[in-house]
Image 1: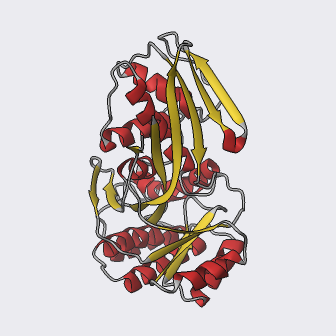
Image 2: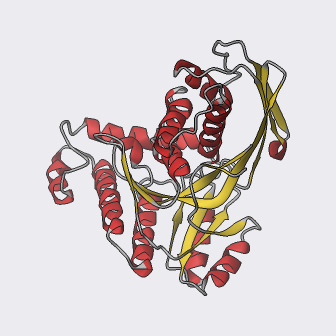
Image 3: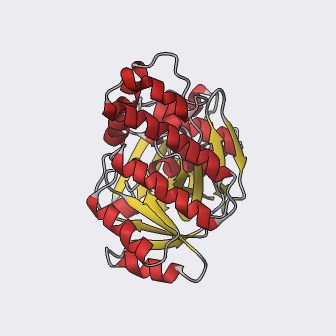
Length: 347
């Protein structure tokens, strides 16, 4: 059996979902593949040839201890045991991926989504999880199990596929959008990033500001009312709160924007917030964005938690090659990607 799961970009709403605010992610045509079969051994073995790694654990009917932090193979298995799944046959799986690792395109979430979907299919129950159920379980196995800082965006985007509008408060709700940003050119800066460190740092800054304004409802407060907080907050904290609300409003505006040109403008505005107020961009990524725009891109922004990793640009059909060439000058890890399906059985 072969299962695949996509990576994703965040079109709009970077650093918003863990605040309970809407996001617009898009699953992309770079995928992770899980090639699996049953074995006679009472064990699960996983080969990861791309990173020259191998892991395994015994099937005893009981939860297995974690080998370290972020052990998503074991946490997915443990979570399914808690949900009543059983495994009487061994499993061997080979995982290969075209998704950049630790680069902001959610390779870890694609891994968790694809693996938990595979495990459910290969359990004694042989259940094909729905996309929504897959996203929820993957979020529990990846984020909640290890106390990570992220929200639900990555897991649901990989599970559901396509370009979606996703809300997590007061409950998880999602819908497909017909947003057309144009051609998407993704480029890896090759700068290593600390995803959890960056998420934790930015989240801590924003939550520190919110703690100074008790009762503030981020989801509904009009941005013009924040001027009332000037006497409470430092100028820097006031700018951060304004930037968070403008980021929120950009996401809403983008949902009703059919024009790829207007979407590009909103991407650039969000990038300015991420660069200047959230401070998650880097000099190299700023230079890559500038080069893409000079080559004719409609818009461009950093992708993911920041501090390195990938950026992407959008372009009208026929202009993507010039943008691709401009970004290739910074390295050979550049792709033209499109919106893609969610987790699925390939064979």
